[in-house]
Amino acid sequence: VQLQASGGGLVQAGGTLRLSCAASGRTFSYNIWGWFRQAPGKEREFVAAITRTAVSTWRSDSVKGRFTISRDNAKNTVYLHMNSLKPEDTAVYYCAAASRITNSPTHVSEYDYWGQGTQVTVSS
Image 1 (cartoon, rainbow, N blue to C red):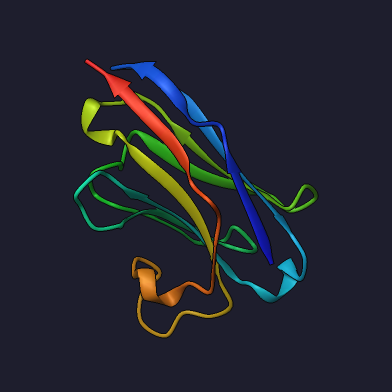
Image 2: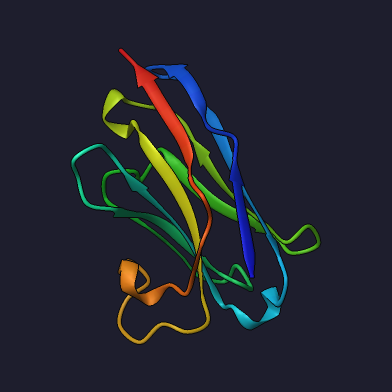
């Protein structure tokens, strides 16, 4: 599976961005798709995840009410809709895919494939 993340950029606080993660390859083998982010000097942290059927979604407490995850299976693409952006949302955002979850979709270790990351910078 290959994952290509895009949509990052520079935005003012309170602004909106939509990230896309386009997948190719054996995408039907992977049931959980997630977004993580990593700020300079910090560990990679969970942002949101969604099942392949979109029946279940998860979001971190820090983005609830502001970010939404969705997917378009016809396009093999997962989206992260980010509203009311804050300077603390500044990070490189990564999409990831997991075939199955043994513990929690919020754990980095659960994911088998990762995209290259896209930079999101929120100015105050």
